[in-house]
Length: 214
Image (cartoon, rainbow, N blue to C red; front, side, top):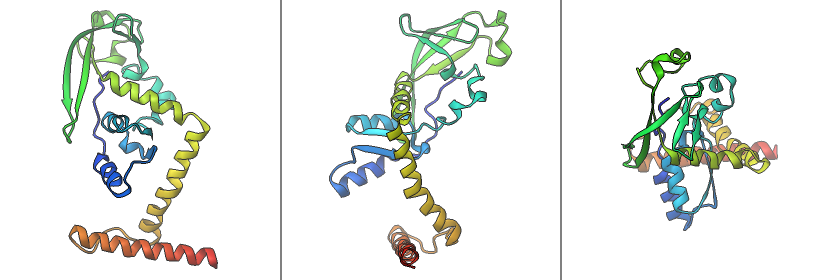
């Protein structure tokens, strides 16, 4: 049961570009699950923006298979009163130390490590760990951010936002890649690529407008 920051896409430079271009960030940020991470949520919290971004395991966590995997942190129970985790065998994992992990962009994740005391005699050990004593590393901040996102996603307004994101973004990418057969940029260099993408976007929008008028 080990929780890591995860290898997620870093969208923070994009947020900063949006802020530079528009003068401010939108009040609510909606993005693909690939951008769901502690680093992004911390950035948006710092800028007082609401994040409606699924974590990369959001849909999996709703499945029976996921809930049956007792080694996962999310399926354990945290006892805040004594700072201990309780596993599926009702055994306690006690805090042993703090450590840090650094993402590729330099963000520091604070982790708390917990360890069980009596794994060798546990009947569920084969489903839980191959180590002599089970150890978990937990980012309490990440777990808190995940819960903050789950709440708005469970509302009707959250569902509408996620549906709009798919309609406004994913369908366009699908059209351009599949229907227009655009799989690779022909030019090199950022400025040339921007020009090529701009021309492609104009063509896409003109075709949509023609179809609506037809």
